[in-house]
Image (cartoon, rainbow, N blue to C red; front, top):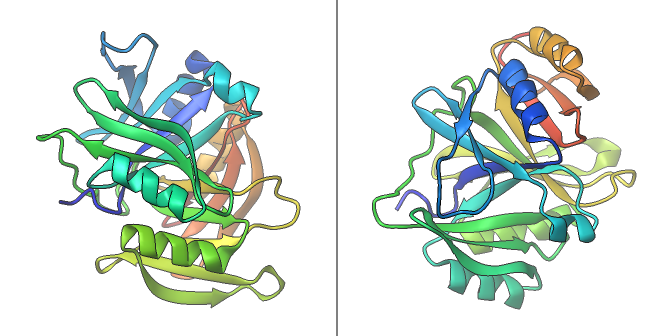
Amino acid sequence: MAEKGYFVWYELMTTDMAAGEAFYRKVVGWDAKDAGMPDIEMAYTLFSAGAGPVAGMMILPEEAKAMGTPPCWTGYIGVPNVDEAAKTIAAKGGRVYREPGDIPGVGRFAVVSDPYGAAFCIFTPLPGQDWQPSEPNAPGYIGWHELYSGDGPKAFDFYCDMFGWESSSDFDMGPMGTYKIFKIGDRDFGGIMTKPAEMPMAAWNFYFNVPAIDAAIARVNEGGGKIVNGPMEVPGGSWIVQCTDPQGAFFSLVAPTR
C-alpha cells in the first residue's frame, strides 16, 4: 500500500481562511474550493494542483490556540493502522495530542508528536482512498520535507524505525551539525537536522514547488508574507527560500531556477 510511510496530506491551520486562500493562490498557484463535506461541522478548503487536491486549510482550533499553537502547516503520514501507530508512538516516547478519530468518508487520523517535540498527524485511508506519491518536481506539489528537531540524529532513528524510512546521505553543515537525508524506496524525500537554538520549537517544514524562486519571492512580498531566509542554492542546483505567510505560518518554496 503506497500510503505506508509517505506524507499523504498537508494542512494549514490559520486564523484567516479567506486571506490564506488568496495568499497561496497567488504565491504557489493553487486552485482552491470548499471541501463540500457536510458531515464535518467546520469550513475546510482544498488546495489543488495539477490532477487534484494536494493540501487543506482550516481555522486554527480553539484547543490548539489554548496550547499556544500558532498558525502552522502540518503533515499527515500514512500508516496501515492509526490506532496501533498511535500506541507505538506513545510507547517510543512521543505524545498523542488527539486520540484516533474518523474523518467521515475519508479515513482515520490522530495528532501526535515525535519524542523530540515535532508534531504531525498519522492517517489511514478508507478502502478505495489509496494514495500515490506525486512527481517530486511537479509545480504546486511538495518537493521536500524538512524536520528541525530537538535531537536530529535520534529523531532520524525514530522515523526510520516507525515508518520504514532509510538513510540516503549525510550533509555536514559545520557548526549547525549534520543534515541527514532520508529516502522512501529509491527516492529522497527530505532531511532531518537538530533545530537551531534560536528556533522556539521543533517542527516540520514543507517546500512547495514553484517554477522560479525570484518571481515567487516577489509574490510572497506582494501578498503580505515575509522572507525569513534565502534565496539560497542547495546541493543539486535547486533554489530555496523560507517564508511566513501573512498570518505567521512558516513554509518554504523550492524551484529549479532563480
